[in-house]
Every structure is written in structure tokens, then in C-alpha cells.
Image (cartoon, rainbow, N blue to C red; front, side, top):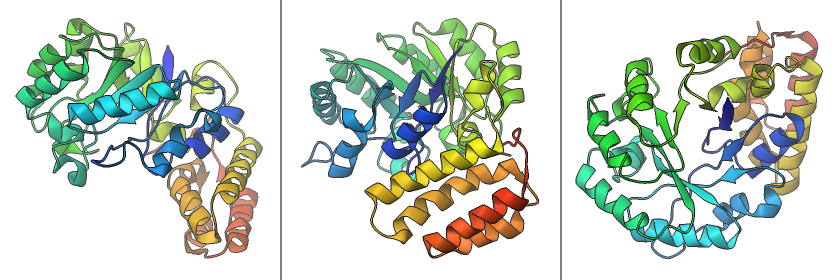
Length: 317
């Protein structure tokens, strides 16, 4: 089984990716949070920092593009080629209302004729390999029959399927029946993404779909950064290891960001996930959330690691 790290906007930027890669093995591909080309600049300065090869050493990184304009996709593709990238991913999966209202992400899925014209153009002379990350429709899972017919017309590197419709957001249960049909009928390699939060759920998925050989993990990896290592038979996450990972990540953010506030914003967001590894942690988590200075934050983190009951099998539920 190959394992990919899903793009998580605001969290899995180059700082997180590089520190995670140093500590934990087994990720075959890291996907960047989406790049959104504008009418004037191909990429913003922040986006350029995120994809610079020197900021992503010794790991396979796939930049993700969010747009509904083929000319903008091609502009970004050529820019990424100049940085040495070999593959890009097209985002048809983001369910956010602010994105879909602009006919982007999963909002593009209901405009199948426009989507077909878009793909015809970008696949006319692609300079990089192209994968697609998709939902199974806008409102109805039956929409995916037509979508898959469209995808099958192109030589995709991979088709990454999150088997929810856009209007589900992250509610309800991923539609495994649609995914099963996709494995049977896709002309391209298929990757599964959706609610594989822990070791038990990942193993159950492998049993249900023995023919699947690629999984993309997101929130489960943010809870337990060693999840892929465990899936590959390695040791379970240890409390001290998590602490060292946390401290290294915090130091890196301090290096590239100015002021406590920006660093704390990043670290607090991560605790929304890692907090699931500790039982009876409300007191310490409240202190972490309320901290306004790094010194107060680190004191609260010290308390959590010293007093909190750590469970390596914690999950995002």
C-alpha cells in the first residue's frame, strides 16, 4: 500500500511537511495546500515559499492547483516545471462554500461540459503528469457515473476519490459503494481518501478493498503523525517522540514567523487534532487555547505532557 499525506489548508505547509518528514517515515507523497492562480500573479510570494524545492528537501511533493480556468492551470503548471516538479494535482474536492461559489473545487463538478472543455485544454500538451482529487458529485452520488466517464477520457497519473458529495462537506459517511464502482470502472489508478482516522479503520479498509493499493490520509495523520509507520509494522507513537516533534515544529515556526501570535495560531490549530491523543485533557487544552504568549503556551504544553494520560491509539472522532 502507498500512503499519501492529504493537503490541509493552513496546516500542512512546508514547515509542517519538512518537520514531519524528518521524524516519521513512510509517506510516499505529500500534497501541498492548493495554489490559486490570480489574474496578475501566477503564484503569490507565500505560495512560492511553500513549493520552493529547498523548503521541501528529500521528499516527493505534489503541488495542488485550484482553478476553473485552463489558461491559469497551464501557467501554474509551467511555473512548477521550472522548479523541477514532475506532477501536479487538480483540486475538484474542496467543499468550502467560498470556493464552490466561484465554481472551483467541488463546485466545478456540476458544470460537466465546462469541466470537459477545461480538461481537453490542459491535457492537450501537458508538461507535467496530472492527477485529480475529486468528490463524487455536487449533491447526488449518482453524478459520479458521468464524472467518471469524463475522467476516463484522460491519462491521469491518479484519480484520488473522496466519496462524499460537495453538500456533505465532512458530514455523513463516505460512500464506499461508489468507490467500489470506481475501482472496477476507472481507466486510471485510483486512490481512496476519507475518514481513515486510525490504525483500526485503515486495516478495515484494506480488508474491504484488497485491490486498492493507494490511500490518502489527512486528519488521522494530524492526530497521530506516526500512523503510516504503524500501518507498515513499525512502532507505535510514543509520548516523548510526540513531544520532540511538537518542539521541533514550534521552533521552526518561530524561525520563519514574527511574533508569538503567529506561531501560537499555527500550534493551537494543530492541537485540535493532537489533543485526541490525551484523555481527560480539558484543563490543559483550555490553557493551551487561552495562552497569549509562547511562554504561557509552553507551560500549558508541559502540563499536558506531564499530567495528561497519553493514548497512542487516539483518533479523530
